[in-house]
Image 1 (tube, rainbow, N blue to C red):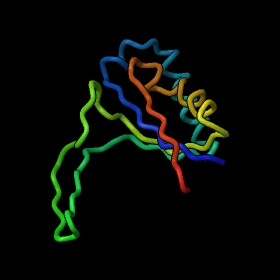
Image 2 (cartoon, rainbow, N blue to C red):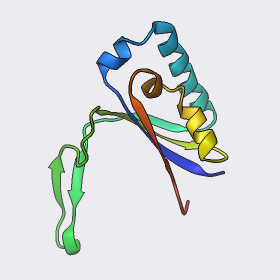
Image 3 (cartoon, rainbow, N blue to C red):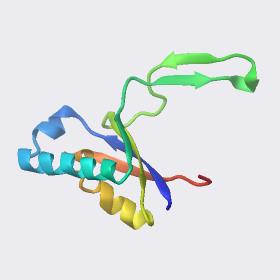
Length: 109
């Protein structure tokens, strides 16, 4: 079955202004995804890694990409196709709490 990487973006303000019952249903959706085998986690502080020409590793704290909302978490899910993957994450906390979820197909897995 195809795998997808999902990246959730959201902030506390968006979460707080979402109705408690909607948040609870979204967390239940995350639990259902975990029961299907999804690997999920909350995003910690990122570190950039560079090794130009394999001549030496350099690291730098912080995200390389920037977005209007901070990265909140990641998941690897399985779905029959992109349409199903979108449906599965459309009820997740970031999607319903005024954030956004990106869905990236994993190729060559």
